[in-house]
Image (cartoon, rainbow, N blue to C red; front, side, top):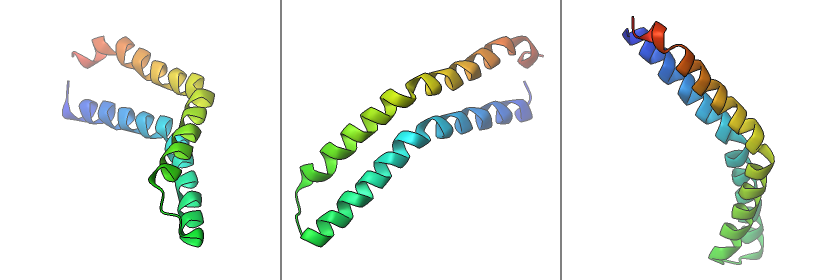
Length: 89
């Protein structure tokens, strides 16, 4: 396996990881920003006020997008598995 092939595999894997995690991380960021603005306006400094809603939203987004995330990760895995003979040359 050449360095270019290894670099391509690693690049594709990183893109899949970022693309699959984007919805849950993005929604966690949006909810965290909204709660931070609410805390700044009301001056409520409660730690659980930021953690619990973000956790609930991230779990809901993961539940809603899990089939899609699973599909793209399995496609990457099948692609890597099917190309093992080509990588060994």
